[in-house]
Length: 347
Figure: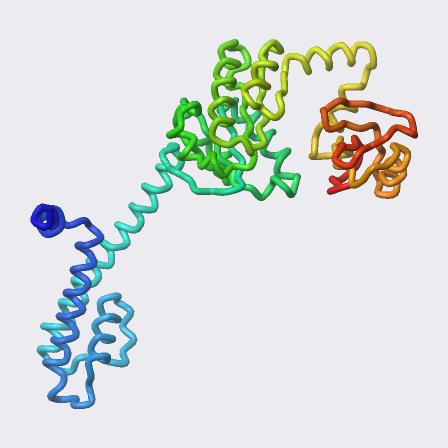
């Protein structure tokens, strides 16, 4: 075994060393040559010269800094030590900088192309590239909420060739791969993710719902604690997504129908609902945990004191009761539905 390892070392490192090792070896060689050469030629005329001074002279000469605190006075020191160090030092420095630049470019290119692996924790993963405009709208909404806005965001998609520049500027990270496979999920560190959003990749393709069910199963199979929201087109898939373990399902076609009918019956309702559903302006809906057992009227008064209008309650079984009677009991852990300008931790 030891002999085999020595053969690998001899073949890989000695005969064909990697660029970084080659640069390091050349730097050490130039430093040794300059330090010993400077001492050899300059020590007779300058007995106070020491190894550190010679090393310092070699270092500043090799990096073309040239402070001038030490310089060779002998011909040998100038032409046999100083000259070669300057020439080879500049070349070596340029080569080293080119390696660093190439490594940075390669790393950035890998990330843009989705070939990187991330080790974030408490992060948000967005599955499926549903178009630039939609992704930006989702991220802009989330960025306003302080509990999510500072989280690292990873986009996972199988077909996107390169992360758009607009998403790069927003600090989004990208992984290209099949989101139903463990290898792809591991690269996104799904086991430590806090939130997952599964978007419909193509709203005109019914097969998108089948893909989202598969993604939901894969995500929940790896991390049951992740807070997942899954989008679907066909309402018949909602029950299947619930069985897959999705925490929340948003059926876009159902909301489209609601908006159309309500706008017909109540002209202008679209603007009202639009403002309540966006975080970018005006007031928003909030579901705030109840801090203790009390009547609904008590929570209505608490909300009013904090600038919120209390609309109803959502109990532990996710049953919603809007505009309940004042004596309606609210249990600790139920969520109080309010309208306000900011999120309250508890009510």
